[in-house]
Length: 127
Image (cartoon, rainbow, N blue to C red; front, side, top):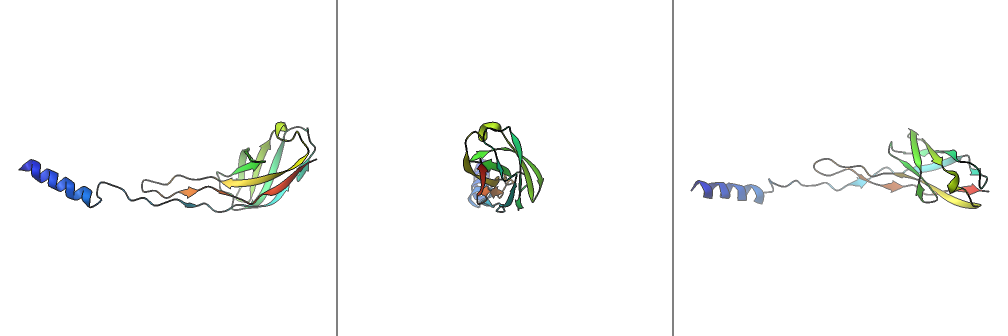
C-alpha cells in the first residue's frame, strides 16, 4: 500500500511538471554598430598592428572579425575595442570587411541568456 501511495505521488508530481524546468529561450544581444576604424588602412605586407574599432553597444565579450576571422580582442569600453591584427591577415592589397560580434551568453537554470549578434560591416583598405 505504501508503494502504491509513493508511486501515485510521484506520478502526480511529474505529471504537473514538478520534476521539469520550463526554459526561457535566449534573446538577441544588443546589436553593435561600428562608426570608425583607426587606422582606416594599412600597407600590404606590413607588420602586425592594433586596430581600434569605435562604435556603440559593444558587449564586454565582443569580438572583432577581420575579413571573417575572429581576432584577439580587448574590450576598452562599450564604445571602443582593440583588435590585434597579424601580418598574415594583410598580405594582399584588397578591401576587407570588419565586423563586431557580441557573443552569446549562457542563461541560468531556467534558460534565458542571449544569442550572438554581428554588426554591419565597415570596409578596411589594405593598400
